[in-house]
Image 1: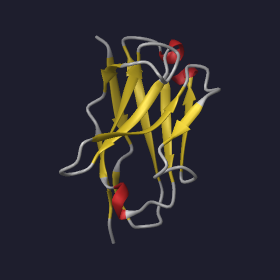
Image 2: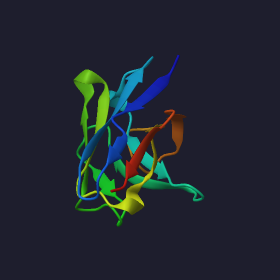
Image 3: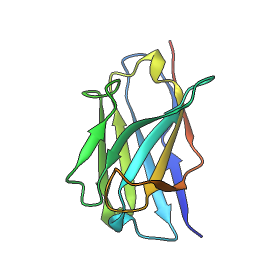
Image 4: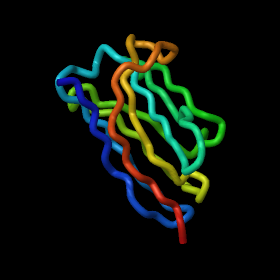
Length: 121
């Protein structure tokens, strides 16, 4: 069964940090680009970041650029999202998704169940 499992979410104060993990099972990640997305209450899902299969290409939403860093460890079948300088507006459920190709401009094909991130004092 193809599956992605996110972890690492939680409650953090503004200015704090969290590292999210996205672990794949049922397939190896190393062929695929992986994206992180988020959905805040009452809002649509938005793209946060993406990393190509080799890790050589990354991109970020303007709202997180300079604060979040995406990385991957293909040997561990895991993609990470390091989130620093968190703001209340970062509060959302965060999802990872496998792309259909090594490149971030391809469609999403497998989604995780999400992990909640809450930024509040």
